[in-house]
Amino acid sequence: MSRSDGSPLVRNQRYFPDKKKQVLLECGPENPGSDQPLSPTERSLPNASIMTLRHNHRKQVQYCMKFIVAIVISACCLAGPGLPSFGSDKPEKKAATPESISINRLAWLTGRWQGPRNGGILEESWLPPRANTVTAVVRLTMNNLTEFVEIIKITETEDALELRLRLFGSDLNLLNEEPHVFKAINQEKHSITFRGVSKSAHRTLRYELVAPGRFDISWESQEGQRTVIHLSLAKAKSKHPPQKKN
Image (cartoon, rainbow, N blue to C red; front, side):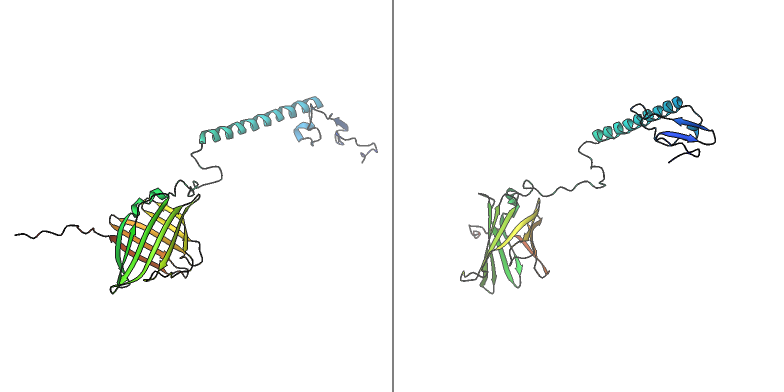
């Protein structure tokens, strides 16, 4: 590439035909931006003034960048761990942990519960937590006959609570070949929800103490049908019959 007079155009050399002169800017550590085109203001200045102007401009840009970085770091330190992180408008929801699901928090199940079921009486007797387990015996009677007996065992594992149940007929023959197995997915003060993990288990199973002396059992079948049973705390019968008044 050459100028209009035929002489070669050297890199980092600016030529202005209207002023018939060359402006040469030396490249180097002290003038790293000399390859940039000259602005209208710089065209009327000598080389030394252009270098000084650009040097001052770079210093101002560097100062502004350091100031912005300092503000961002200060904001992060002041925010602390209690506030949500940048880019999130919602606080993080805590996932269930082994500490939040514990078999020792199932003492509210303890007791003998009963209520109507399909024209019969359903009874459930729950033992208190002990030795890492909670056990229950269930019986459905109808027309003075036992329809089935059910045994439930809840065990605390490393990562969750596992519920297993087996159904027996009136002569104690097994009604299901394999145990129905559930894993706890949510536990609150007076309720616990399980998700079925075995092939024959319901989709979900939930126990809840809805009020003092009132106990609900609900489940959702694999077909999506939902069932709720309302039980109440059975009153213990007096061991001594009332004495007749004379």
